Image (cartoon, rainbow, N blue to C red; front, side, top):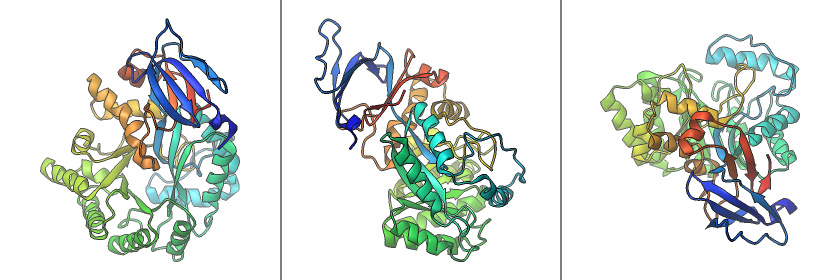
Length: 398
């Protein structure tokens, strides 16, 4: 633990989740207490730390990026025009043809990207890191090096991600197995039918590694309609058979938005029963997740940025609160409770996506705190205002 994490911090006069003014005591990088703020009787300043005046600002937990690609970005470099075909396979081929000339993955670009994301209030990440025959496991080392160089105690979970396919690239399964053996938290998969042309074979191989190595699975599913629904069925079947509830995630999962209402409701219930979660990047040009139904059923849903200014496309500023605004719009959220629910999805309710039992403004939680100037949580979502203060593990970032 760093000296900054060891120091005591007293954050006074903040409004957790827009509630009553409170003082938050932080010790050893963890929230030790949340007490009512009394302006007539200021809390005593810690002898071995600092006191920060929260000025009555609204306090939220740190944002959780549940689907990032921290290794892919050209952030901080000169502009890189996009030149690939507008298909999943076209983007993969374009990235493979040009990443080496740009030095991707790059510790410097990843570090600069992380600095920007943390300054915007994101304090925890699940990052898919490319693992393939060209880069090997180097991308995982790059991301870990950049996080260490950040000097801020952010949470990081690694998904060893076979972006270029699994079975169609002999040797990739061995790399995924090695990544799991060397500490990757999850292994990934990608469109088992359209990319590998063998959904049963790909999923059997991935589930075998996950079960044997004791890691999670995080599988990209871009395929829609009944093909994507069939792949959901295969994933659910294997999750139940191996007892992997709570360890399997479907990223994107557009097919669920294509299904007739009755079929969709049945799939939501199966996800709940099997303990399979979903992550979304709030895409504007894809079938929409039945967010309210998933949340009501208790299916964990995480939000992430996907790629940010990379060889897949030039878009993205990494602001997860602004992305949560888009998710709320796409989901048709209007009422205050619906807007607040989306903010919880992007913060406290996403704890499990980064391996935390709790991620909130409560005693015992990591001291990840974001202050914004907003009347309440719905306004904070709608405006996505400047982050006035960010603490990650009790360390001041902004």
